[in-house]
Length: 223
Image (cartoon, rainbow, N blue to C red):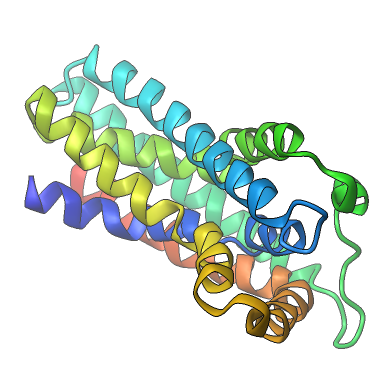
């Protein structure tokens, strides 16, 4: 189980280091119901990421991913394909990064974030956690790791929990800062938000490239 968790941690980091979901959490902390909205969004994000991973792990458990099987070879090929996709996406993100001083406008839905209610924050969190293509690709790779490890049901649940805890650390960080620092957290969060908005494309390009290489290596080793 320890080896499986070790293999999952880099994948979970690919989810937690995501500028847009973190920026959304920061903006929610400046709404009329900051803590309720931020907590609802965090819970929704956790549910979305967990639902996708749980579904993919269940599918992986329904097939034979043991070493040397044809399915295992196919899983290795899938990881190679995912790695290539992430590397291509990284290249596109890097080429399309904005010029210094000209950040990309935030998504349209973020324009009305100041009027969000906790229920809407929850729904948006689920959608961002579950429907982000990067999260899905990483969850698929994580499901292959878990499915090929030969774990018991309890161990599988334990590895999923560890993955989810690490995967939501980035989104949870702004809320933790507010709880710990109170009003003194405002300039900290503002500086984080400005940096994330200015460097979103570059950060995402680096993340996609790094984990594209990770998946290529895992796929080659397991193919």
